[in-house]
Image (cartoon, rainbow, N blue to C red; front, side, top):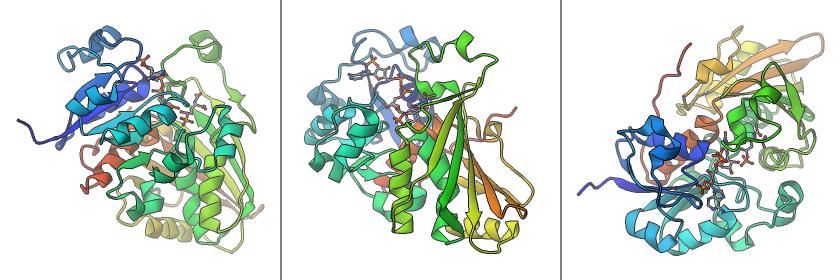
Length: 349
Ligand SMILES: NC(=O)C1=CN([C@@H]2O[C@H](COP(=O)(O)OP(=O)(O)OC[C@H]3O[C@@H](n4cnc5c(N)ncnc54)[C@H](OP(=O)(O)O)[C@@H]3O)[C@@H](O)[C@H]2O)C=CC1
Ligand SMILES: CC(=O)N[C@@H](CCC(=O)OP(=O)(O)O)C(=O)O
């Protein structure tokens, strides 16, 4: 019998779930033992994803915690907001480790969650147990924990782009403006009026302006780093591409730094962290340069005329923004090297 960590995936018929299946296929210490669907239990994984023929031939299981506990040690929840708040406590009570990819356990203040997500929040006791898994910022806090709340895709790109500058005291946080762009897979597999082909193709649009549910998550972390309340302007745009997020971040500088000094500051902050790559002076990252990988690439330009810095941060929303970061958190939970099973070269071109 294999002594690999046994993994169950709830929401396996969605994009986050199928990306977990792709990435975990080559993990040296973990194996998928249960793929779960609330609506299609009993049917084949390949009914929904024929590209997995010969790779994942199993039948989809039901969400039942006792059934999952018989088959697995750790469960990934890749379900829409409002589902994990109910399922995660049941899985934890059954003795499973849990990593939730949704927003249900990120915001610790129940009233704030309900204001932005327009859904009932998880119980406070469960929220208090869940560790926010942005490993590059919260480091050791993530290690050995049984319950991780995986950061959102936009917050991952945005926070990794801002935190070192804020921590280093070189930007005025009251001037922060974040202009974010995402590919369409961020909306999940279910088609909707706003995301189907003829609405998106040859189009570029802003959405959820000043109302995006990731605003409180970004402000929560930035306020912790700054040790005072931080508020940001944050606008999301839908781009006609499948994967990728670019966060373009603007802020006033508070000191006379050069781009070379910024590069050094960020390299020092992320020292020992494999998945954040700081671009050399004069080079800015593009989404294709991280496509299919767990990297977050960051570059800078300083405008001496306005005394503003422009920071560009890119990720693949389904990898570093979801499944890849979740596996990184699993590695840390288990005391393994965070890069295990995640050393993919980006797909290019
Ligand atoms: N797509 C992305 O880039 C990112 C997504 N996320 C978050 O990850 C989560 C999953 O996203 P994504 O995979 O894109 O979404 P999808 O809509 O593609 O998939 C979600 C899956 O959840 C399952 N589901 C729905 N309702 C329930 C329920 N009541 N109980 C159990 N399972 C349910 C569905 O499968 P079934 O009906 O078979 O059970 C569905 O396939 C979301 O919370 C999302 O916000 C986070 C970062 C990035
Ligand atoms: C294109 C698109 O619609 N993207 C989604 C991504 C958010 C997401 O994945 O949700 P959580 O991280 O909150 O779970 C959005 O902007 O709402």
